[in-house]
Length: 170
Image (cartoon, rainbow, N blue to C red):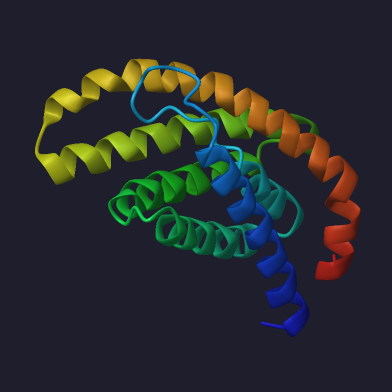
């Protein structure tokens, strides 16, 4: 990895981590466990659509790990990591089918995959299949928050995409 690439990914990670920490201060938008806006995912989407999957993976892994450390909730690391990796995998697959004007669509699928990943992790950790009952409301919240974060990422890619691609040599 070049120093430029490491520095760029570190700046994106810092931005995502800052957004994550600020979002922790915002009350949950719905009285459903696990529902949050997922604003830090905007940065991961921007990284994926402008720089590629490896940079997005680096930003995601660093943000999730440091977020768990800074929030003092290492238990959440497993859930965030499972959801985040599944969401990134889905986004990488849908990215090949979509344009930069459809990032919001990829974001919706990613948010739903994130929620599915978190429920799967929770069921495996607790051996409680009844937790799948939370999946329908979480999927609905994923659609709503996915549209919002996707549109924000789409706007950011439109504004920052050229700068980030140039720093990447693309």
